[in-house]
Length: 307
Image (tube, rainbow, N blue to C red; front, side):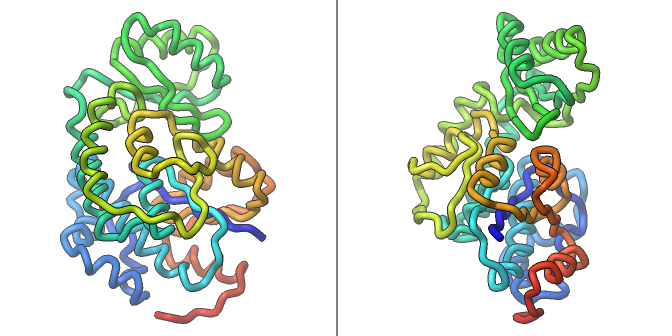
């Protein structure tokens, strides 16, 4: 059996996330207590602040790391990956940087992304159905109206487009003409993972230069390629903020390497849904509560310890 850990991205947050792990496990308590202001936001809100990009990213990373700390002495992981922000949680698990540094970086990343684009000038939409090549072709067809690019290859049947409002609106209309009926505008502060974030990526790069990164202790599958990479990790993260997220391809890559059990770490179950749409033969577990973690413990037959 080979195990891939998947870390949740932004949008999965909810009030009280991780609280049961905090109350039950010492390792989770230590993680949360190191950042009391973010801990209190995770547990108590207010929801408006928790949903704000500037604060949501570090809150999700803290929760994911607190949950993952319980698994770290219990299972042997073969690969880690995360969706957008989740890549930072994955890199933290793989010891690329300390939790302190990861929290500082994601706080800065959230601030940069929240303020990257003028309000109301850009948007994103999830295209449910349709071929990736058709969606890419439509993006190219409307490019004279502004930026319109694929932001996320999430899974078969779900692709996210990102760009300037007029171009996105025209793309939605064109996709509907092509027979794709289910297209959902996303409630986001701006167009993420597209070339509009070029300036934001440079700003993030300046911040990343202040930190020391280590080589991953576990193989990491990166968003910008859907594979492992030997590139400089700082460069990868600079590119990630403005590039497409190849999550579907990341799952396919890990499966090709023998991964047959995926564990989603962090709030929500979005990534587990994506994995099942990529391949229904692999095992998938979501760990956002102690109850779900105990279901996994029965499968992997570990002993409860290190409370």
